[in-house]
Length: 495
Image (tube, rainbow, N blue to C red):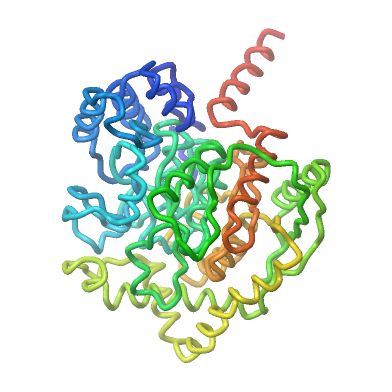
């Protein structure tokens, strides 16, 4: 429900030490010592405290320690910390460990105990020089497509506070879009990087399976559907993050991505998918946005070819059963998998509903797992004649808060989720890379995005296309959009 007492839009952009820079631009200013690490950290903390009463994107802060770390960077001799993003503030999503901070996976079922160690991917990210300000919000165990935890305030979309940020990396997306930090950690088991990026007007790349170090959860999964990454406000931030991550760990089974710094002149063959395999037609606004992007790519010299989704009709049901298996497993074994003090009586309605759905359909699991494993091969074969595929990110535009809340009766919520999240899971099952890119705005001042999926190991091609789209038709950030609206109002009043 919309709250009339809330302003429609909120952001923290100002002329402080952070300015309006993306992470790459900020890192360059820090290297040139045009601004101090401490000033940048203080600015980010001020921004977080300013917007947090409205956004609810931070679940645990690390502000004092972060400021100390920034001051130590200022006192280091040049070359003391070689990280590309040295001094850039960020947040880590609340399902990976940061030593000394709690990891609660967005759930009231897990106590506030602090983590004794730092997760491997968190290390891969922080070694790039980021300064961690704390943990960002998420829905319970990342199962929902909106960041509305049952036990806490919903995370609100800074573009329009009555609407969802998406999920499950919704807190990170809200904080980046609002200008608190330029990038933040995200991970993706069914769309959880790309969905919040789409809702909040950001760049969200889900890398190829195995591109980055393994997530903490993958060792307990029959099929690894989880990839870690970031959400950012620019393509170059995502490209530079991936290049730096590759310097720390490079999978020998995948072609290296390298440093991608802009679009190439290569002309590509790109498939086009407008409607989901589950039979739900994409809404008109989203559909038009994808079609407009296809025409833009054609003007840039690429060939656009309508294609069928390269999976059997059973895929949506198979993935839903796997999703339900994960909920059943967490509820039954959370004390072993997540925390000895896990209390299954406190899980939310969606987790309970999914677990019950699995118990009713568990007999289908062997066939579903076989088909999901085969989907990687099927997808690779279907991509033989294509460099990428253009699709919507979501089946319809961003819903208002409450539409996907965990208190909605499970049967209704499940149906709504299948209409909304019907393009992103394919990349998780197949392990393919996929990127969400802003491409338009609705009448409610909400971003609409498109998805590009690539061949396995094809992140370089996706970044090439992303750079081209960003250069040809720059998408407005929240700060630019607010300034434009203010200028229009001033001009209208003056007229």
